[in-house]
Length: 274
Image 1 (cartoon, rainbow, N blue to C red):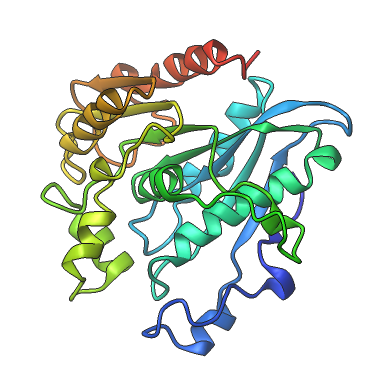
Image 2: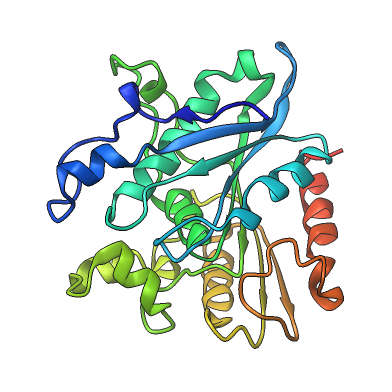
């Protein structure tokens, strides 16, 4: 595993994104991308960037490097992104996720990856971030002076694990508050309720949840899957009968632990995994 790489030039994210976030807070947090498993120069491995959960307040360690190492065992190149969280707000996390995708594509030759097979995997609020960049990720900017920004900022596949997807009416209140504030604009809440944002440009998606998740209602995954179906986007949906929130790899919960096998099979179906 390599050292974290700042996502933005000089380590600083764009200024002025959120007027409620102080300049000192902007300087105090450096969004990064950590290479965990990469290929050799000239290889063309598929890639997954892992976005840990944490309610947009923090990043859960067990949903980061261990997951990237498991994906690496399937023959993928893997990275972990630390995107902006509170006191930063929307669109900071979206910008960071898109920048991570662009950075991997910009350095594809160096890292031995295929710039046309770059996906995201997110847990909980990280799932919301992954779905947001799936639905709203920016396209390439061919004339941009920054070579990284010339790359496409939307993933080619998404894996969403017990994800926060709707901010109404099945929202996880803590994630919504951290992302948008207590007095969030109603239109913004609607736009970031991602079951309303799916289009035929949203990438193929793998979702899993537990039916009795006490923190993030399973309706998040069910309604997003319905939106994918209506848009004609291929997806896989796995709902397990029981399991607490924040399971990560779920190695200690036998009735849920096979999500990794199901996900690996899905990735092989895409032609991404060994």
